[in-house]
Image (cartoon, rainbow over all chains, first blue to last red; front, top):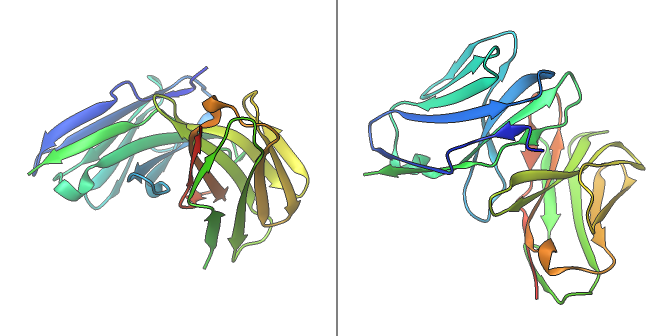
Length: 112
Length: 110
């Protein structure tokens, strides 16, 4: 039972363009969402998060959008850079449990 | 600042052999601790979760077990490894804002 899903296993984008990574969840009790970036043979690193009381959070080139009614969040990277090439995971947690459930990941490739 | 140590970085073990992966956290007390596994097509799967010494929640049925003998130590074990236990294992600690990951262990069961 995959509670957090990333339906696109891979995405290719030209340098300078926008990358949009999508994530869907099924548990309506999730109230905090995160995006992580992961390089091969390394642990994931935190990028950006959003609480369910918000619908948008921005940090530099990264913006996360949350649509609670659709149980959908997305990560926008603008402009995309070759160094952004990595696997991106979305994650969710429920009501102060601090238990983070991750999605299946999307491999982003930014083409120079 | 907080740091998390996980070892070994790579491990090749024969089927049926035991496993012990260790993770320690520095710079924080009473952390929430996690073991995740990254396997092809499965993303980062939460295996075990601990909110305190001796408290372990198992998220998926499997051939593995976890223990937390000390506040900042989390151990992943198996008595007899299966081929399907191969994967990339990640220890993490978490607070209310995010989970912080170790560098991971690449386990290959042969």
